[in-house]
Image (cartoon, rainbow, N blue to C red; front, side, top):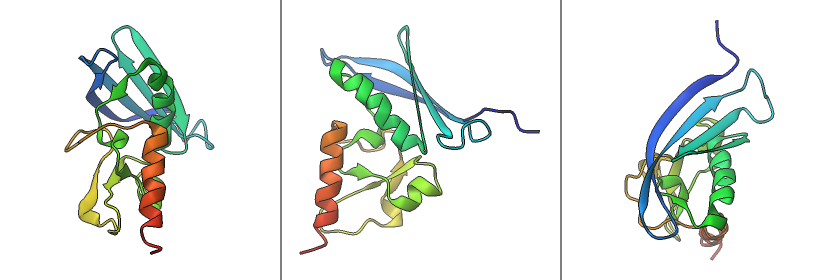
Length: 146
């Protein structure tokens, strides 16, 4: 029998803090679909003596909410999901709960081989704010209308 809340994934990650140093952290992804139908994905970030929590319809959305808490403190997770030019498509969000993002290049369609795990750091070139990441995604969408 399934419990009310279930740990779906756990990731050891790094955070870049305001002074440029790197600290260890952990993201835990919980499936709360049996408890909260409207926000079934719960993300918990722990680092040093802190814990941050966010819920959303998918883990990418929850990651954005955690980032909104971190950005005023100039703290950035060093994971694929925060990279400029990294964004989940509809299917990656719906079917994969936002646990994968695409590597996006202006003027090029995203392919299956462009999928990378949201909470890993395969090839992160630069982290971005939520606002800058969304702006790049919008530019990427516009790049097909030329």
